[in-house]
Amino acid sequence: MGSPSSLSLVLLFVLLVSLGVAVQHCHGGETSSFVRKVEKSIDMPLDSDVFRVPAGYNAPQQVHITQGDLNGRAVIVSWVTQDEPGSSEVLYGTSEKKLKFSTKGKVTHYTYYNYTSGFIHHCTLRNLKHDTKYYYKIGIGYTTRQFSFTTPPKVGPDVPYTFGLIGDLGQTYDSNQTLTHYEKNPVKGQTVLFVGDLCYADTYPNHNNVRWDTWGRFVERCTAYQPWIWTTGNHEIDFAPEIGETVPFKPFTHRYHVPYRASGSTAPFWYSIKRASAHIIVLASYSAYGKYTPQYNWLEAEFPKVNRTETPWLIVLMHSPWYNSYNYHYMEGESMRVMYEPWFVKYKVDVVFAGHVHAYERSERVSNVAYNIVNGLCMPVPDPSAPVYITIGDGGNIEGLANNMTQPQPKYSAYREASFGHATFDIKNKTHAYYAWHRNQDGYAVEADKMWFFNRFWNAKDEQSHSS
Ligand SMILES: *[C@@H]1O[C@H](CO)[C@@H](O)[C@H](O)[C@H]1NC(C)=O
Ligand SMILES: *[C@@H]1O[C@H](CO)[C@@H](O)[C@H](O)[C@H]1NC(C)=O
Ligand SMILES: *[C@@H]1O[C@H](CO)[C@@H](O)[C@H](O)[C@H]1NC(C)=O
Ligand SMILES: *[C@@H]1O[C@H](CO)[C@@H](O)[C@H](O)[C@H]1NC(C)=O
Ligand SMILES: *[C@@H]1O[C@H](CO)[C@@H](O)[C@H](O)[C@H]1NC(C)=O
Ligand SMILES: [Fe+2]
Image (cartoon, rainbow, N blue to C red; front, top):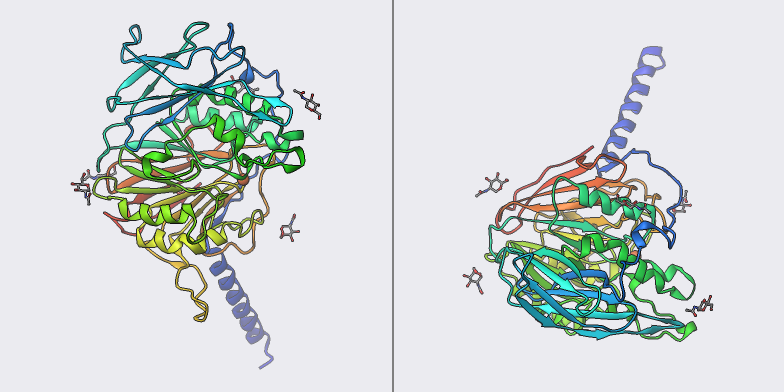
């Protein structure tokens, strides 16, 4: 004892042990060291090119489409006219020159404090052929505008389909970059799964609803041509009793229609659709979800209806994430997790996409369902029947990036990075789907985080992921 060489051996041992501990902490996952700009995101000014009102008297604006039924044979077309109600008719057909069909929709409007909306039209086109390009024209009687969309293939087990993932978009210069990156991504998304928080009008005095209109015009270049599947976020609540606005979700429900009745739901905040080989369940973080509530009863009945032979991929969308290791909105999703996580494991949900936290994070397959009030089993554990949880709230809105993370990174967190971006979920067949996350600072083709998903029902093997 005391000789210089044995002392250095002891020191070396201590050093190795502490290194080992450090390495074990890192095994929780990867926190990206990517360095990005730190300036705050600012909203594009009202006179920006992306907010331009289309020319012509009463020209339709803010055009957007979404799925209009359970199986993808209907499309809801929505738009706003500003000067007068005009017509809610849609002319459509499979030939660009000759629109053989026509359907009439309905027009609505609302007031919010001292704001009066334009005339908001919704029209559902039904009995469409699968996998077919349709052209549609609106603004009949005055200025008309024509757009197109492609219906999804018939629902079935091995139907390839590519979903885009965008959340918390807002209307800043960064939002515009996110949308541009989604459009220019060489992997072409066919439908956007939007995880909530659309326009952030509620960050303005009196929730200035003019910002709902500018947002509608901004995203039209995408939403007029492919469906966006809507999830409600906290910025859609617009509950403001101080200015007399006591009906939650008023602007959202007037402007964005979803096919909730088709899945037996009683409110447009939770519902499901089948599209190609996916069964997609949309949940509402800001509607009651406790036991005996409408949402709870609906979800309890919904999971047993999922037929993995018909739709192998089971995807859930919600706004507030359950597994989030940022110091923002920390544990806000916890009470819903406690209510619903056992079902997610039992029914082998493949992936859950959430937003709310303005950053990116992907989890390992973990569950935390063993706990009861006395057994002390309250830690997330690896679970091959559990979904991967992805936070994709990094669309680029005015509130800026969430960059304060809990330390050390928890074991269940596979990858996390505070950058703006979007993702794609590219279903190949009933066993394989390729997922990739793109950050806005990179070239359009660069995949910053990627993973082959193996279907939980048909191919529940371990997966590997790669980040760069
Ligand atoms: C609404 O009220 C705010 C202030 O309370 C005012 O600045 C704004 O111009 C008003 N807008 C309209 C459309 O009257
Ligand atoms: C938004 O992005 C589009 C497409 O990249 C571009 O043409 C447009 O000028 C951008 N607008 C603003 C205000 O950044
Ligand atoms: C599930 O879907 C398959 C394929 O469409 C069908 O043959 C089967 O009858 C369905 N099962 C149930 C229980 O509906
Ligand atoms: C990060 O969040 C923690 C927990 O809320 C807080 O204590 C800490 O001050 C924050 N750090 C920074 C740099 O803001
Ligand atoms: C499913 O897709 C994966 C990835 O493209 C491929 O390796 C696999 O062979 C496909 N399975 C079948 C049955 O075609
Ligand atoms: Fe949010």
